[in-house]
Length: 291
Image (cartoon, rainbow, N blue to C red; front, side, top):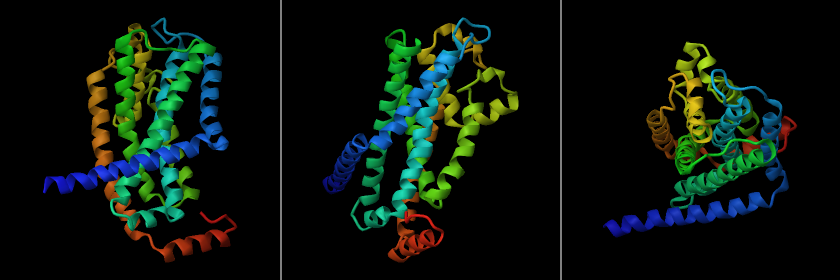
């Protein structure tokens, strides 16, 4: 019965893409949400204007290295901070409870969220690169190979962090604690993954630990696309290591997909009307607005 299996799957993707398109239109019409993303671009422009000097041992401006790292961090943040917060908030509002009652609801919900977050990330990245290039002489790929590298590193980077963000969002306790639990490790990775400082300047034990995580490889891949080849001298291995970039990001993408759907289904199974009412009651008692 291959046809019977194929149709529900196609229906899940169609429903998910339609839902994602609706949520994206709502985002574009929400000035508060749009301001949050635009503010990241403004910060990048300010940083590019303030940072001076060259990367040690190269003629590459330090501002270009920081901007390439900041671009990677934005992709990382949208997948591993913004997405889990969205999922936890909607879980508290009963969205997962409603999805549980819909055939194929959880996979379609995940497809919609992935579409929304990928569109947010690509739009923010594109705006960041254009704005910094126009205002602060920021880096852009110099040839078709650079643009191709930018494309596949961005795609693999998002595949690595978006499903992982969905899995994290499924297990976080509530929206009020989500940001506090996420920001400390995310900020630690920002300052130790070569996104702000040359990776080779960090202590070797730190390099070994953060090399396990995707941000280091996302930043390195984007540097290879945006910076000249001479900037490779500042890398720990003296090269861009693009095969390793692809391998590590692919491994994280597979892990994220293996975790995301089961954890979201588990979160949905644990939801009930009484649990949601109890959460709202506790929020009201603590003086907070219901989630």
